[in-house]
Image 1: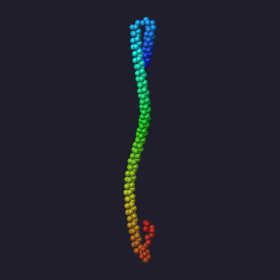
Image 2: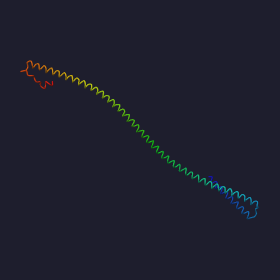
Image 3: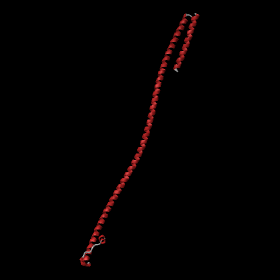
Image 4: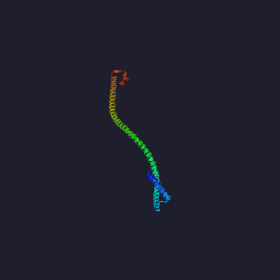
Length: 192
């Protein structure tokens, strides 16, 4: 707006200067004007030309300022565009990082759940192992008792066989067989 106003003022002053120049030329041609009026008009003309010149210089300065401002604005827009691009890249990276964090949290939760299950399984297996050990110890005790019983019964059988053999031997000596030959023990008698 300031540039338009200055341009309008400059155009207006140019019109006024043009009218004054015509008025001065008409006065000179007619010779009717006095030198005082001419001098006054010349002074007004010079004053207006000075104002016009100042306005033109200011317009030139304003144009240069506007160019500098436009250049600065262009640079800022480019910088802003670059920052928007960086922001977009950072936003994508943040979203990807958030996705990774979410995925890792889910994996962690799954691993924790599996670890808990495995720990429970280990505890159950340990309990089963302890139960089996206890059962094994009980079975070993029973086996030991069974062996002792079997060993004792074998000893008893052997003692009975020996006694039986001795009894049979005595019977043979006292009247049993001719010519005092010992009686042979059959396989059945040995085993039972």
